[in-house]
Amino acid sequence: QFEGAEASFELLMERALGNHKTYFELDGFRVIVEEDKGNADPLAEATVRLKVKGIAEHTAASGNGPVNALDHALRKALEEFYPNLREVRLLDYKVRILDESKGTGAKTRVLITSGDGDETWGTVGVADNIIEASWQALVDSIEYKLRRDERKGKR
Image (cartoon, rainbow, N blue to C red; front, side, top):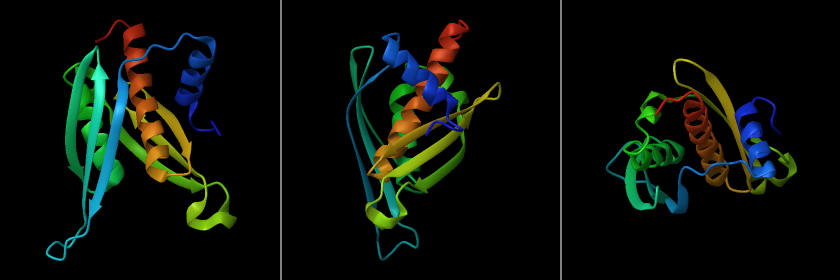
């Protein structure tokens, strides 16, 4: 499950050993995709509710798809506290169905490759819901960047 997702594996090990630092806490998120007869493309919008350093953040953003909107909303909530996240780019996004016999009800694995100009890293999310799997991979990507920069003394 962690092939190509070494950053998620490192974070998993830290969690298992009790050494994981939490940079933000999720209160909830919502993603809406709206098809409008007047527009050629569907509109995707995400809302994210977090606590960052004890401060409640509630942001919304749109994107060209639900995962893109979720990524924008998450960054919007965090970049004020962690400006170094502006360096991060999502370089690749792959989805794989883990049990093909279940069709659209199958468990989904999302692999994300991210980079910041200095390094490239991979993260993974696995869930019955593709948006939840994407969220897990996005969060791991951001936490890995924050953890790595903190260890290098960057903020």
